[in-house]
Amino acid sequence: MSALTFPILQVLSDGKFHSGEDLADRFAVTRATVWNAIQHAEKLGVEVFSVRGRGYRLPQAIDMLDEQAVLTAIGEQREWFNLQLLDEIDSTNSYLMKQAAKGAPHVTCVAAHIQTSGKGRRGRAWVSHLGASLTFSLLWRFNCGAAALSGLSLAVGVALMRAFQQLGVPGVCLKWPNDVLYDNRKLAGILIELQGDMDGPSAAVIGVGVNLRLPEQVLKRIDQPAIDLASIGVAVNQGELLGTLLRHLADVLHAFEDDGFVALRAEWLSYHVYHNRPVRMLMPDGRDVHGTVRDVAEDGILLVETALGLQRFSAGEISLRTGV
Ligand code: ATP
Image (cartoon, rainbow, N blue to C red):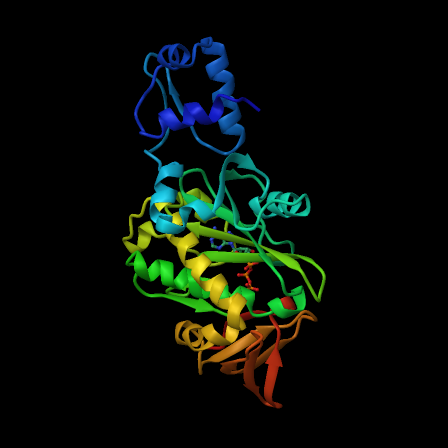
């Protein structure tokens, strides 16, 4: 670990060469200390070119998350958020779950430049890369118990869709329970972890990962079709994206607190890519169940017409795939 790694990466984020001597002068350290800081960046998976006589540079310019841009995009509600930008962390969700248990305030948001062990559902991994992905988690405290939060992950999908629409991202849709897809490829993922009692109060840590501009070698590490905003032709600043997402998350979470998922259900259905389409459900026991999606219930349960009639499926252990 080197305290200088991220300040140096911030300088290198312009994609230009910076000599070891200039960097050493700028931070009042030796060139060996600069070299050590760069070594640490490489251990984190950041490729840094080093050319004798010219110095260090990144393969291309990158967009580092900037606090001011986030606050500007949140707008009037900015005072309300407790925003923490971290350089590197194993997982923003794991970190915020621990902070929540120690009493972190309602509406704490933790974003990280680098996640070293990003998480998906059921022990799966979320892949991200410096300057190429947005990864953050938001803590929201509820008076109700965890039992009343079953539709929450779908509600969060609505917030993401509203934010993407505001930013002019075309052709995005949701896949139950809450992946954001473009052309059947995954653009963003959501992971919600809960703590507290079943009958209240409770706290949700809402983790979101959005792909901005993933390098080819990073895309190859993802074991299902994935896509990023740049490939869709959308160039959005990370800070603006985070602030816009937080603003819509706050609106949706307030609506959810007041009325539950029922208030958002019709909107969610309008975004669902498989509505009235044939699907295949991957069951925890390894079976595939085939059917046609008909509806979603007020608690987020998916209603699918199968050979046995209209059946109810809860998100916990099931993965949904196209049936054609
Ligand atoms: P489900 O349909 O059950 O939600 P899922 O496979 O989408 O299934 P998640 O837990 O939501 O599972 O997300 C984790 C999965 O997402 C990983 O197993 C991987 O396949 C995929 N993934 C990981 N990183 C990324 C990324 N940056 N972009 C798109 N997809 C990713």
